[in-house]
Amino acid sequence: MRRSDCCDHPTSIAGMSELTAGWDNFFIATAGAAGALVGLVVVAISVNIKRIIEYSTLPSRAAATVGSLVLLLVIACFSLFPRQGDIAFGVEILAAVTIALVLQYVMVARLVQQVPPRPAFENAYKIALGFGQIAPFIPGGILIATGSAAGMYWIAVGFVAVFVTSMITVWVLLVEIQR
Image 1 (cartoon, helix red, strand yellow):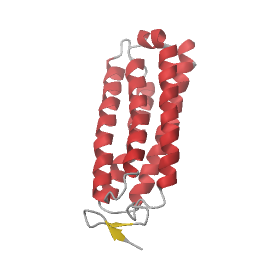
Image 2: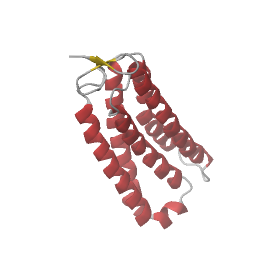
Image 3: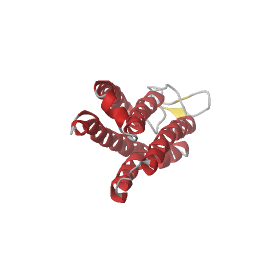
Image 4: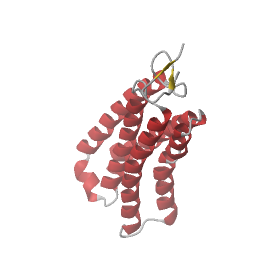
């Protein structure tokens, strides 16, 4: 059974596009996890705020981590809008990713301006993690906007990447900062 939304886009019975149908549980679960992790990062920041501010790069790194987790929350919310077309969902993903990329850029700018400079390998690692976790959302959003189901898998990879890299930053903000 199919019906059309305002944009004459085929939808499933639940009102999701055929492309996103079956992904609702994934997005519901990851929205909850992302919300919980945003809380954990905020607690880590508030507990160690004096130490975090002592480092020129940690405030922007913490902000980029919060931004990446909020990106997951926003994408998960967008995915659950009823009767939304694939083009709209793909464009929403790309718009949200743009904001997260700006936060990553600020973090990178602080890294390269750090005095004394950190070893190049250390900066490259942080930059690769920062942008690497966001990168899958770009082809994901484009593929979804063009109606390709492969985009959903790119988005799922991005979610996992953000979760993993966010936990690394939480570890730094809670434990490594105390050394």
